[in-house]
Length: 307
Ligand code: HEM
Image (cartoon, rainbow, N blue to C red; front, top):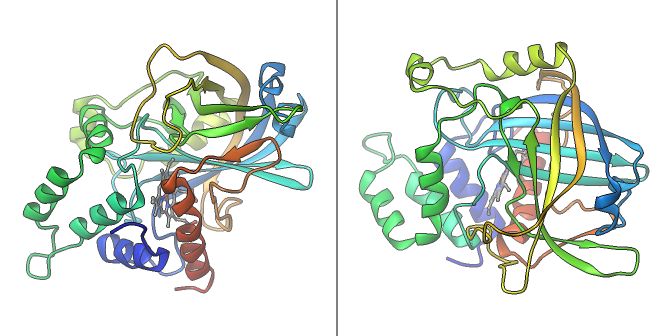
């Protein structure tokens, strides 16, 4: 079904993942962090956003596990999120990213169909493997993300993962010139996936403490890069990677200096809607990017009302 009504999307999400009253409908388990971002002149060449003015910009961050289970295991394979809110004077800029380089849906309908396939069967209380098989067979746009997640162990620390915009956006410079980009944050600490032995131990809750301890030892940093799109690179489909040889330009560095449990944390009351964009960065018509906003707003409204 496409386009998907956002209320139907959230209803399907609630059936697939369950509901934790007062909490996010997706990426429910998470950790707050804060710090700052400093942009480089190289970024200002492509975008007039205050992000790249060179001044120090306060940032509130939230790291999370994909899915709606508040007790999901940190040892399980799956997406890890990094959401950022940059405070640019009167404006806000959001970046709501995942640690996978391709998304599992070229259109919202694929994501909706996935949620429907994941809904627990009334008899078994578990997703019906047959429905999941049919979903996979009918949605080739899901395969890139699914095989990436299947073949990569999850990170030992949120600080040891890269995070990707997935969607393309448009950077707008001082002369209104637009440049198609995707962005990513690469960890200065390097990547550190759990070993198979570590995964098999099955520890459920280590990511939050590992991040808190890491920030106590000093600022934890990621370099932000943009990849420059060329004619023919998809601007509407985050399930399609761009060719490897595209130019990457470093445009800034994020430094997080503290982290905390999300309960009453700085990130808890934020709706990390990816369409909160400051002057100098524009959304593409990517239908998944466009569909996210309304779904996040419904989830946000519900959790604020204690639902
Ligand atoms: C149609 C596709 C999608 C739907 C319907 C959807 C839905 C949602 C919802 C309802 C939330 C909880 C919002 C809240 O209560 O604050 C959420 C959180 C999140 N989503 Fe999505 N999402 C989609 C695609 C994506 C994509 C493509 C990405 C990555 C680029 C992504 C990354 C995240 C992250 C990182 C969070 C946690 C944000 C936070 O920490 O507050 N989602 N999503």
